[in-house]
View 1 (spheres, rainbow, N blue to C red):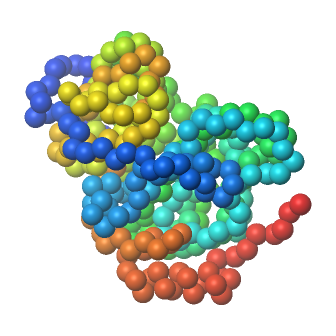
View 2: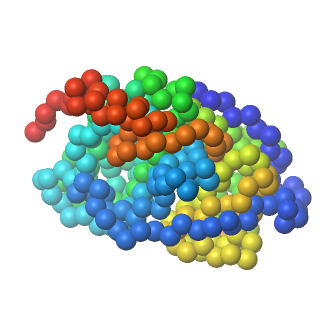
Amino acid sequence: MTKNKPNHSPSHSRSHSREDVRQIEFILPPTEQHWVGDGFFVHTLMHPHPRLVDRISPFLLLDYAPPRSFTPSRHRRGVGEHPHRGFETVTFAYSGEVEHRDSAGGGGKIESGDVQWMTAGSGLVHEEKFSRDFSDQGGEFEMVQLWVNLPKVKKMMPPRYQALQGRQFPQLTLGKSATGRLIAGKVSLDGQELEGPALTNSPMLVMDLRAQEDGGVQFPVSKSSNTLLLLRKGKLRVGETEVPEKSLAVLSLKAGQVQLHLSKGSEVLVLSGEPLGEPVFAHGPFVMNTRDEIIQAMEDYQAGRMGHLEERD
């Protein structure tokens, strides 16, 4: 586990000049929706393009499945058995239910408000499908899946699975206008230091924010971090720049504070992490540092060295 060293001052304690506050550097719009498997109808907002990796590291890819209603079915939708090596998948369940199982023995169900954090490390195969109850009953489904890169020294670590339940996340109060929950990392707010339950392999801060009323929100981030904002719904302004709904804002570097203006009911996923500063070589479900490592990953998977899942009805 990485213990993030908080070097932040309490929020809401003073006003900040423009130079102290992150601005929007650029906005990544959503792609046209497409199916991942037959259960996740997603917009892709970022992926590990060579021109982008340095500004989003340690994050790699983000797929957003906005709210969609599914009718009851005996068929369990989702994504079948597939491999990963060299990074982590993080699934945020905002509504609906997903069951996970993998060849390293990890598995479980995440429900609305839960987060699943799977470290592929040296390699495994897994599947993600609607839970049996959700398939039988149907309902609204909204998810985010994030890929998080692993540092070179941890790319071949043993796989790990974390099923994080909503009640585990510390609740945040950001001034008078917003609340939130802390998923990973440390943050200091109004003199109180809080830490999220997720075990991470590099320093990062992951939070969900929700505006209770129109107003400003301020929180600290590490000055050396890359900071990204996903506006799931509502209205968000950073400085004078409006962020379109279902878009990802990449903030400028070096400032230690983030100031947002949110409309009532707006919901934002905050991702802030220390860049790894290492080569990224990505191919399909593998993310390594060199081409040779990718070739080795493909050979290991094809030879069955990442395991297999037992068939189920």
